[in-house]
Image (cartoon, rainbow, N blue to C red; front, side, top):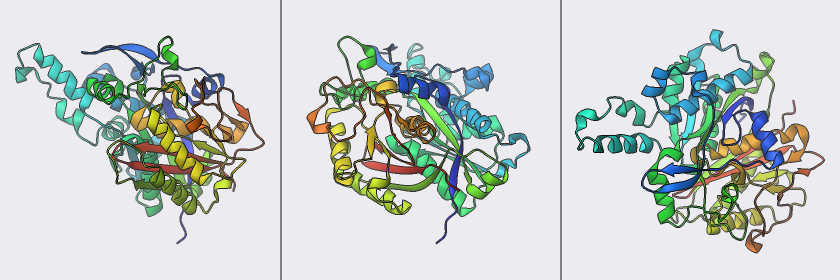
Length: 412
């Protein structure tokens, strides 16, 4: 079956270390991490990656009161992506735009805040906000984008744990190929840094990262002393189009999605299964019609947990065991784990490699764990190469959901 070619024509993001792709990329190449200590209810200070964007750029104070943090992040990123795409949005048929936003969890933050608030009034529910239900339904934050932007096409939020950013892009690709929409806003968002339950849950698992002296070294994938994740918020939304539509309007093309796969470990709630992860990558390559050696960058999901990093590197070693020109990197040392936004944000950090042929490094690796030591792992310093034409983006999540997305440098 002949499928339409799907291309990326715009990107909007906010991350702990940048609110535009240019700022974000610059900090990745310069090794700038921005993790901070935040005061978490009931826990005291914990390391977190917090975004510092201007929510009032696209929303009024009232809209911010009524909506959610995840919705605000999504609106900011969607608006920035539209601007970046060059689309004549005001004159575009809004019924032909689809919105597909991945997220790890939604509603935890709002529910925790409301329970805490009414605890001050002896749990009298008359103090419970009437905005609670629309804030916590599963289609928020995608729905907040449509209300803010007047989009009348389909929208939904995709729950895919920490694989959600990739899943949002895959869903948009499929809907474009089916002809259900002509233009899509897709990616992932997270508001996890406001949820006590997220921090407490990781701490109880022994998976909440710490560092004795430097908060910006808390997230240190592949380092021998790594001891857990940094919970972060963020968002990254792309504009996707069929190639012929993008070319017809003279759009710039940032990359082409040529392969993808989502599969399941079916083995454990938390511990990754390297056999299934390897299978996911191989199947994505098969969809793309590519061999492993054609991939220039493998962006790892590795979260800085002792076993998670090892399991993924086992999977990568199995697939790319004889690929001398395939390089491996990771982004979480800079920004922590942005949960539902992770896959989309980490892909964005690598997309500029198509133009500058530079691979951003994995940072905070002071002593490489021998069990994570693979050839061409880019550590602490950027790597200049002859060409970058193919990126494979890994993003995995709890309950054993795996995703792999393959982006190719556009060639007509």
